[in-house]
Image (cartoon, rainbow, N blue to C red; front, side):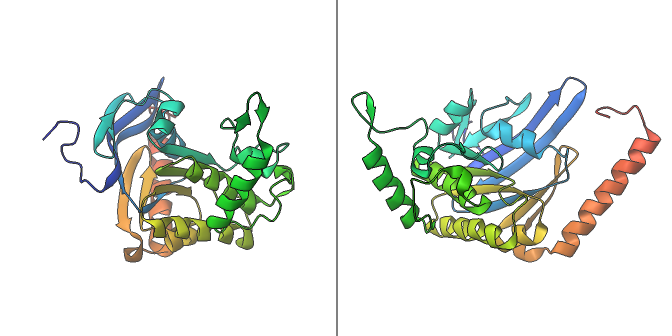
Length: 267
């Protein structure tokens, strides 16, 4: 067996193994191992400062790890950039950077991938394709010519996810997709994630703070605390109560250690 695939199940879309990352004196990640299978939705939970965003930025090629390895579809890769990660089918949807407000829905769908006729934009083709793709994904946008700024938060996130899927993403990283959304808006995204899961060909990692929402849509949850994965459980085998207790215990432990060692690394 080739060294790059040793220990990786064929169904794994992504394996992050023994990854560490430091920023000067601050250790953001220490020996993180995480995997997600094709067709699986993994919830990544943790308090602010736990290292979730750093881990996502490593997976999407924005940061390079100081140690460890990343395996995509059974092949070990050294991600050089965000564009390199996208070429491998890895795409990230950020809650606050999803769309360009001043552009229409269909222009956002084809941002940096515009269809052209010579030097001119083929707006008719992009409108038609955007409408068809959103309809196929069950995203209810009646007018794709409307500016993104006029859409609800749920609609904006749905379009950003649809854009990634349209660009052939096979691993979707959703960074706080439900943040600051009401129940109705969040339901739009949760339904979309369920539809993508049913397709079976896309792996999804969701960073979330709402444990109930995460358990309702994720197949498995990982908890990241102080730069380490401390909990890996199938969603049906845990609960909001257990996750809350785990987080509370972690918070109390951090407070105690900070009091005992005020000059500890990373503080």
